[in-house]
Image 1 (cartoon, helix red, strand yellow):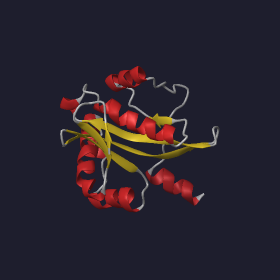
Image 2: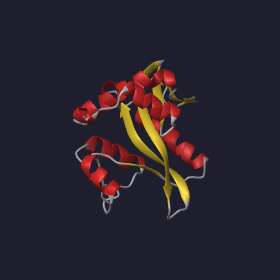
Image 3: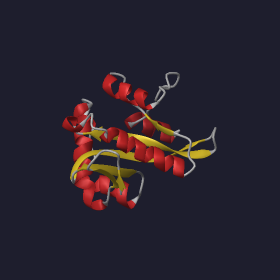
Image 4: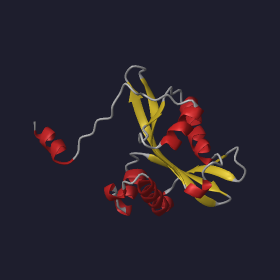
Amino acid sequence: MKVTKVPGCIIREATGKDVQLVLNFIKSLARYEKLEDQVTVTLEVLYDSLFVKHAAKALIAELSGMPVGFAIYYYSFSTFLGKQGLYLEDLFVVPDMRGRGIGTALLSYLAEMAVEQGMERLEWTCLDWNTSSLDFYHHLGAIPMSDWTNQRMTGEALKELAKR
């Protein structure tokens, strides 16, 4: 647990008891991003992925004991650096709690973790229409990787490639 510079705010690692809370945050994020129809995860799958297989980890931000935000991250690897990094999969702060430093506290927690473990990268993606988040990240010193594009393969295309 880390006390932040935001009065009354702590950041803590999620535990198995938080799986419903994490799922609720995921659904809130999807609603904000207009991607609700893409959320198919169940409590059981999320619990297994986070707390059994440890595919990723979750942080919970609490303000005066109330959960107000979360982040999901996992370890990545840079072949160019030859080192691990952190990849931030999701970051969300409930709308009426934004502007209080909670998002910064979550990112600061991850940056501190990366630095302490000798990592040189913290990376994430952001929807191109989300200008408030892009401005927030830029203000913190993030640099857009405009010369790279994300690629994704799912469904039948993934299955077909697996057969080749």
